Image (tube, rainbow, N blue to C red; front, side):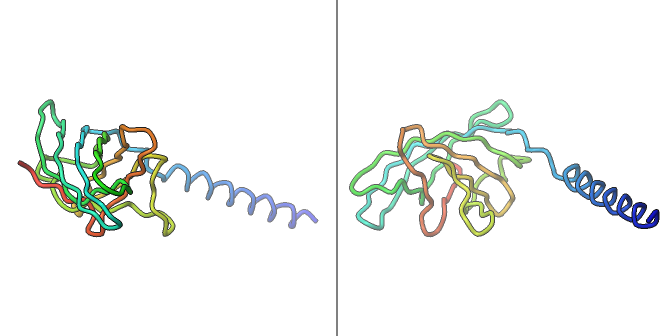
Length: 148
């Protein structure tokens, strides 16, 4: 009887230690290191084209860029205004590129009016629409950002 009790206590301690170690090993959520504002227009009839520009605030400076590929699920001509936070960027050279939606468990991670996306350099943008009720999505090629 005493051996079973000791084994049960050891098993419980091992499980508890594993849970504490796993939770402690998770990285803390990163702090945003920049801000982005995007203004774009879209012409759509089922499949559309989106173009526009934006401003990146990073390191106390503002940088202007061009975008294409962002969709707002509209038909006709639509105006898209979005703001977001930028993470995992060491220099402005990391910012341009093609962004794809972040996936978790096979589903796109997006909020009620937002979208989280990442480029090939690991830069993450958490983008949210300024207008109420706009659902941001990415075009078939993602969101392309190039510096002006």
